[in-house]
Image (tube, rainbow, N blue to C red):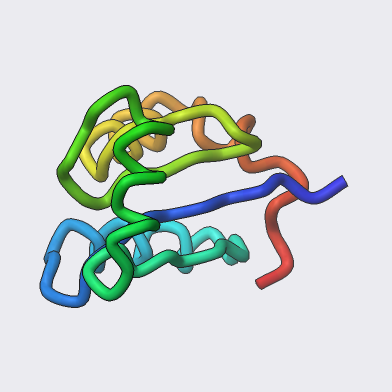
Length: 90
């Protein structure tokens, strides 16, 4: 079963680029949602993330991971690979 990875981004966010590069390096497929193009999706992101308004906001299997720093900490601790099991095949 493939894990579901969703990343909310904007076009000008360097942390979004870093988060996508990290996921790409792990060959993980993800759905990218550009919130700068759609106010409804921005509201959705804020609601799902518990009020966070910064990007990226990353979700794995519906679990809010947080931003790039949070993703990087999970990676460094080895916990990201566990969360991503089944999400590979990009």
